[in-house]
Length: 224
Image (cartoon, rainbow, N blue to C red; front, side):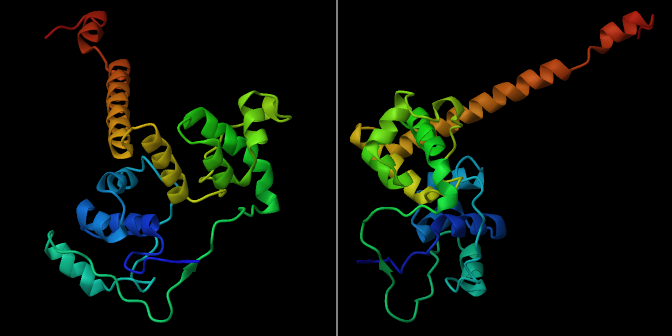
């Protein structure tokens, strides 16, 4: 078993969400503390990734003090120092088959369909680890020969509890790197694309709802 890094919070994304919502710390400070990339912290703040993640108080978790947060809020160049945990270091179980609760097993085909459709960069081996499935099942869903093909509803495996958001992000990053692509650059490009699409959508909505008063005045026989 490998030891967990006790210099970082146990739940980095949940901690990041809480710090974004409850402090005036910079994204750089939060990224440094959690071990996440600053682009990912900003995406969490904008709810572009990790939707549904509930923030967890770093103070209640015993990882930070209010005084430490206040110190860093006053100095944007300061780095948060996590409270040293007492007792033996926590162990991470060695790699092995993922156990999926019975209630979640029927969700697997939907999760596989989501990954095959939206993240072709994730290898079948990685999908097997994330979802707890087999390569023949993945191929059957890809070829639409799976018994549930007609009723598949692609759903994010992290959102339905089959894996964590962190595990999913790592698999996506690993797949992109294997293809010679930069995960951070890809995330930033996707963010910029979404912002451009949202801006265009907002502009179109404004155009549709705008009212031409000149035509209204003409129709009522009034003029200025």
